[in-house]
Each structure stands twice: as structure tokens, then as C-alpha cells.
Image (tube, rainbow, N blue to C red; front, top):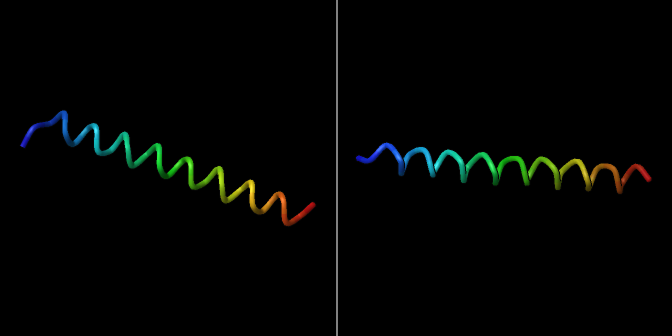
Length: 33
């Protein structure tokens, strides 16, 4: 198992998670308005 593959996977997971959090906060802000 290569370490770089694991690192790339965690970077991808982190970016997807942060994007989901941003979308969630945007939806909540739109609902509050």
C-alpha cells in the first residue's frame, strides 16, 4: 500500500466534507432569510 494514495484519499475526503458543510450552511442561511 502506498502512502501517497492514502494521503490523496484523505485530501479528497476533506475537500468533499468541507464542500458539503458549506452547502449545508448556505441552505440554512437561505431558509432563515
